[in-house]
Length: 258
Image (cartoon, rainbow, N blue to C red; front, side, top):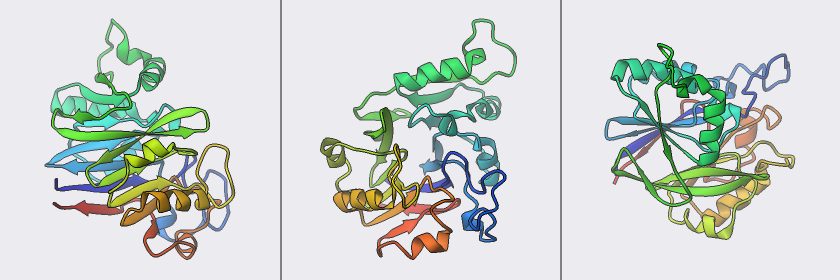
């Protein structure tokens, strides 16, 4: 399968720069140190799919000139991953259809709470039109023909889905992962995985944990995402990484060919 992946956002829940912060990362002139909230765009056969629609979703769609969107896949229900869903209204209007939303039951409950007006019996004009498609921890297909393998990781006590599409896997907000789930990742060529900072964190991989995880999966290349301003600048991070591991950045594009 031929497809591309674009990193729409590589920052943690606060993004970089962080509001009111004057640290050397938040004031860096390097554009790679400006990180929107975590999300990726998959372009497969001319169709676009987004993993997570956080608070920067509108800005990301405009920045990367996304003119159509087939579906949104959600990893979990935290606001930095789902707070921008209202802006699928533009695609509802342009494409004249409901937006397919692939998510766990827990995410659906959160969506129905946060976007209650979208599920009301008395539909207000202009609300987002959503078609919820529940997924579990077993393979499924998006748009009927694109196979996706969910990878369950734990975000402290919360279940989060990573996703594998062919030779690519995307995992965010992981702290622990079972050996059974790691087996699903064997053979991936490119892995994007969260690495919040160097110091340990209660619910995210730190750098060493991410590197240990990458060593178990053994992809050809790995990219770190969900990066905090406490980690360092893009250049500082890359100096600490092994040859096949890189710091992701907003706008990074990965091409996959058969």
